[in-house]
Image (cartoon, rainbow, N blue to C red; front, side, top):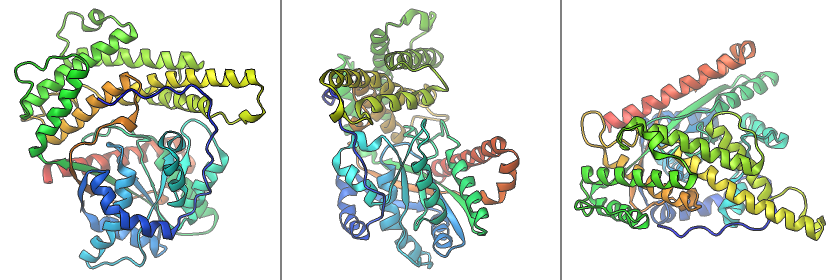
Length: 465
């Protein structure tokens, strides 16, 4: 298990990103370093496309001025922005030549990222993001300049805009737990701006579903990861603890999951007996009740510390805690003009915010770890090794977050091969009249269509590859 992170105890100077502008020189350097970064940092051995011709033609239409393109990618693992950047910049031109449709220009994309990424990721990422053209966005706060930059990129940007409709990492590759309406809303903004300018380009959303495959010969590495969690929470793996077959791994994960939930209940002062109602702690309905209670209590703790009123679903509440927390740790007001006492109070607020955000980070992961997805068996047999790896990583991540960690401490110990499944394009410009008449209903239908396309990609991957 990783060491617990050091708490933040002082208000820090808010970093200011440079104006976003793609640097071709940096792009060339990253393409040179990309393969080594993929192998060493991402543990990525290869990237393949399913229906790669759809992605090639979408880029071609964009580059030749027939469309404005939004690349809507699934975000289950955490490293999708890096993976897709490498896929677009290094692999897509090869795919285009392979199918006999070389692209007019080198492909690249303008990625949208959460405004908070530069806060926790460090100075190198803060330097890189604007120079690869990435744009920050806010979930629960309207920032006019951010919106204007995004709209300009959608309508006139040199590259397609790439974003995650899930809004953040969802930790599950084989289902779509939650989609936000932002992707559809951005597409309709683009269509409105094009119509006002008298332009006739299509507005296309292209769904991309990424899946990684691991070698089952690496099962011992997964077993070692579980062993570290077991030792960390004083859990005896039992007589089968050293085994690494799928069933043995799944059984160990069940016991780790139960132990971590029990420790969380102890920490939050929740009654185990009331949650179980006399049933086995491994009963899926019992686990879901316990999960729901923990999520509610953790959110209340974080909101209470920051003085936030509960509003919205759990992830919306996560966003609001995150925003308030980072605003205290990196206050927008200049600390240089504060009196010594004001400075000490700002430091105290920053320290309290860091601890409040530990509750948020716990929910950020735990919300997605439902019993149905982490069940020992899938319909018709034992769990896939890839799903076991996902679940093993999430358990290690959960143990870390109980002691103050965040996604930057999530393990990535097994080599992997990525497959990008490209869905049929979703053309939304033709729905602009409907959006003008009924924006809410049109957004809901467009988002439902996007979800259906993602689910189709998942089914194709599971049963065809």
